[in-house]
Length: 358
Ligand SMILES: *Cc1c(COP(=O)(O)O)cnc(C)c1O
Figure 1 (tube, helix red, strand yellow):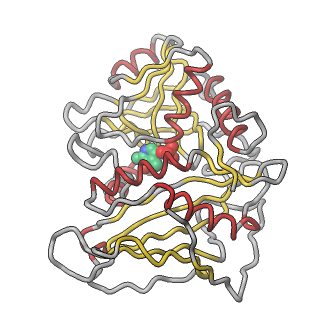
Figure 2 (figure 1 turned 90 degrees about the horizontal axis):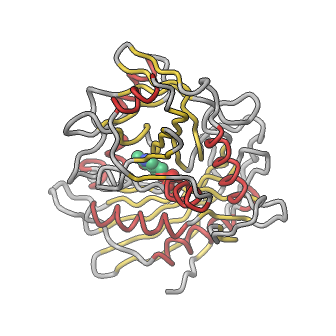
Figure 3 (figure 1 turned 90 degrees about the vertical axis):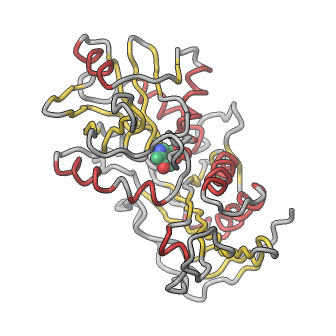
């Protein structure tokens, strides 16, 4: 598949934001990628155009029944000037699985990665260089067919936008920040047979209520438990969750309710390379608290593209607070962050061939 897209450059480039005050996802670059899908015609009219609102028919299916999916990855500038993407074919593979679950059309992974590369190439001047900053890339697809019947739409848009970002959690020194996590027992994120493994907006809309309740209790995120028994730990907010107990690293298995994070997969691969015991198995919140009380819970951390590795300092559950380790940054979380961030930014050798230069 050839990836040639038409390019219309902006006549009014925007000023670049100050890299010292960058937050997450607040400013957007000069251009965006757009492509159409129509039944019969397939994906067509891929183009890079000035960043602008997208006109939408009020009857567009996505506005009513939420038929959409999104992805997230980052571009970093290496010390030698190269622009690096991190494992973008993993995002393409996951996006295809999300589309299949949402009855949205399939696509060639080369089209997906080719579109990202074409846009990032044009926006290279927008990639901030300061430590901890990057260009966040948000590909997404949605049903824009104007029709109120409930069935899979016959027309879609594929869009990619980019945002220069700073650290996900505010950190005075620019390093990792230990978070407080609320163990959620009322609301659930995903049930087997549902859409938990797909990266779709509906999962996020359904999680906001719990997120707001956690914030009221002074917690950054929630720890989701399984929907059936409300015992097994699943994910932390919109990241994958890891628990280090007696030197063994445990994370929930991919059985349909867990989002298969690229960072999760990378962490598991690094741990295996380091000969650190790592298991994908179910573990209950009671086991986690018991290990914490016995002094066997060494670390808890979350993984995801936005924050890479996010150490957990406290778990809060129904009136009980568990401080993890010394409540600071665990040694393994720090080592994983340094290794992953080093590879992503081209500062460490890429022995697993994870980066793709644009
Ligand atoms: C995106 C996401 C993750 C993290 O995936 P990465 O590919 O590592 O960024 C984890 N959980 C949920 C629910 C997500 O949406």
